[in-house]
Length: 278
Image (cartoon, rainbow, N blue to C red; front, side, top):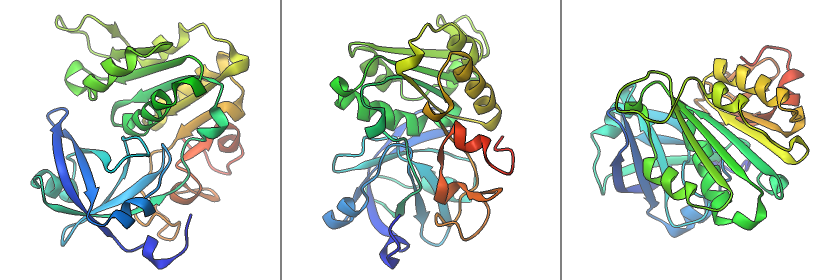
């Protein structure tokens, strides 16, 4: 992480477009006002930024877009003052951006591996960035399986992206809903149900996940049960991250700060923590 003060001062980004994903989630496409700021905001999938509405507040989001390109995208659920203010904003309005912060998924180290991605709910954005990265560099990775779980079909985001990803050779996208309904004809049940059915070559597979803590606990156990070693299991933790630099203490877990040392951790590292990560 860079230590210059410019890292902590918000950069201005203009809203280029707003996409309604669900009743409570929107994806904002942002373009920095200064080309130099976009270059400075160089991130890897799994890293995050702090996004602010002047006079209201600041909130943390992982990018759901590919690292390269002239814009960045974040998906926002309307749950508080800052996100409510963001939902009142329109194309052309300005949002403050700080970052990027933390450690993302080690994509360079995963080259040549088969990938299993498991996302739950609003934990999908950082893994969407992983998918965009891997699809763009398709020959650098083996088979890719994405399992995405939601409570009901009204919570599904990135439908168009999932269809596009699924058309790539060697890519399987599985969406599963917990609550059955007549309109849904896909998989039902928890993500672990779909994960347990996979047949993999554990010697060449890495497991990546992001979602609620209870989901991560069971998914990590299932990854291990499939034979994937703990140092090839990468989990993105959800914590309240307000400063991005390990100073406010809100995201502390034992001797670690999720914003500074994570949010992506190897399972082997989580097992060594002085406090339970779940």
